Image (cartoon, rainbow, N blue to C red; front, side, top):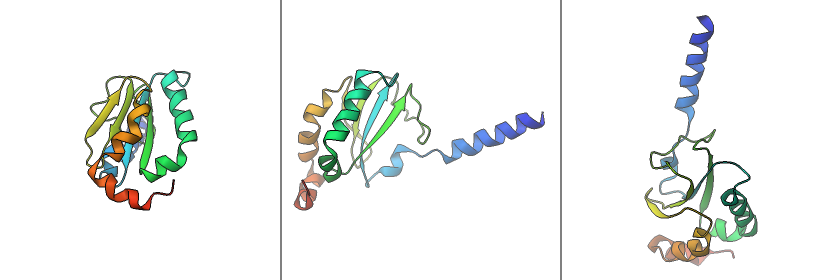
Length: 127
């Protein structure tokens, strides 16, 4: 019984510590990737995209957050996350785009660059 109480307290403590995606509202644009396993094409392509586009990702103030089987050790699972795919979440916390596969990356930068707040940010681009 004593161990059950300790485990319950630890579980509650970790649940309280989990960050919300909304913690980044008005600070970062989020690219949320939901996949089943790390061998999935969506995960592998995203890793490659991030590696090859670091400067452009920084210019657009993007944070990539990964959910494997709808779980992430650092973040609480958003309520909309009920399928695999890639979401773009804007500064305001709303979903700006979704794709079931990596094809979102073809239009990602163009979509972000068309956003009103991004137009002001472009003045300070490094890439």
